[in-house]
Length: 529
Ligand code: C2E
Ligand code: CA
Ligand code: CA
Image 1 (cartoon, helix red, strand yellow):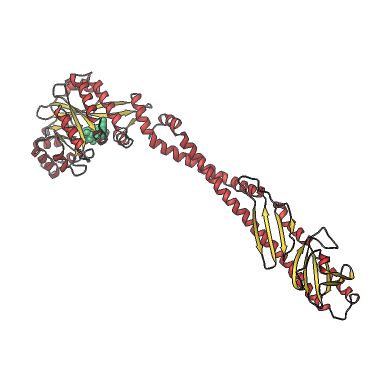
Image 2: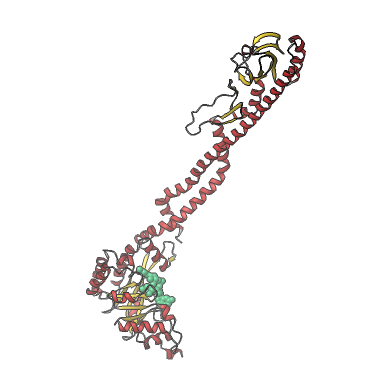
């Protein structure tokens, strides 16, 4: 609605923090949401990886136990290692994963696929204390044969015969490397109460935002932990954020457009009315009011006009409503008073001539109201007209004592009060009694209802009758036809205002119009019929 030329400076001066916020907000929201989503994403990956690793460890474990069971079936109390060694070597070499397998008496190894006959505690072979007899499994740091590489021991030991298998930890670390290295994961598998078999670098927590994430999964004997380094979280976030970026840019643009639209609507009228006043974009048009008895112009209604810098005229009902909503109606009415006072210095109004101005509710209820009208009255005093304040039912809705007192005060000083747009607002009857009034302006909606001289306009008739009973002078608005005029005249209406008599005109036009056409007779119905 506001022209671009008038809006852009307002946005530049006052609106840029909001515009900036509207532009940045989706980005910040995107940062936060993509951060959370990336954390979830990394966590999901960790969860999947740890499950795969656990399944793999479980497969190795099942395989190892099956081999232990096979070994146990080989044993006979009277068999020697020499008898059993070929079978051990065959099983140890054809089955996957094993570093060595062996047979025991109690906790002593008497036969091993790697060393043949021997007599050494299993604890020495695996280089740590064993949990005891019975069935157990445990990951260890190394064995006598290969000290520097972890292994997993599966043992089923009893007083007489027993068997064990040692799985090389390499099978686990190779698998862990294959699934975790591309992402820099740190992985560990602990079997029984054993030593962790690990792969990768343990993550460090140095990033202010992204802490390392981990996932633990376990089965009764196996505990798996997978941790992602901070860099993985950062990469995941960046991947998601760059995918979201085009959407964020669109959202930013939409938010900025919405903010600009809102600013234009919200701020422009306040600022632009203020600027319009400063730039003298407002002017006043005067619509003559015809005094039927005198047959002459009895006064004018001052109607504000706003022509923008680009030449466009703003509709009065729109900018007046906006000025009321934006609390600019008081400065605007003061400006109107100044404009009218300046205009009146240019033309000679007859004595008793009425100048009507429209007053909004907010102004009426403002403590400065009486002083404002007095100042206006003082400015135009030398030109002799009477001031009429046009109040609408809406502006009288608050029947506060102060308003009644203010109106009484002004009325005592010679100001007339008119009730405008009568019949269109809220219940007006009570106002007629509460407020001191001189004129009642019948809204043009009722005048429009007059279709012919003999026709029926019951509401209009009732309003006119009521007005007479209350000794108020009636002004009919929006009189456009001779029929309407004749009807109103017959009903005893004293004043008419409307296109039939005159349209609103500039001060200069009025100055020329008044002496020449002010007292021209109005077209009568005889002329039409
Ligand atoms: P309003 O006070 O009822 O003013 C009369 C409106 O009716 C004016 O419209 C006028 O141009 C129009 N009018 C006059 N004769 C005829 C006619 O024969 N036929 C038709 N169709 N219309 C006619 P305008 O100037 O557009 O003003 C609209 C409204 O804006 C006014 O209604 C008034 O409520 C408000 N307004 C205008 N100037 C001011 C002002 O200075 N202060 C305040 N508070 N309100 C104003
Ligand atoms: Ca009016
Ligand atoms: Ca009116």
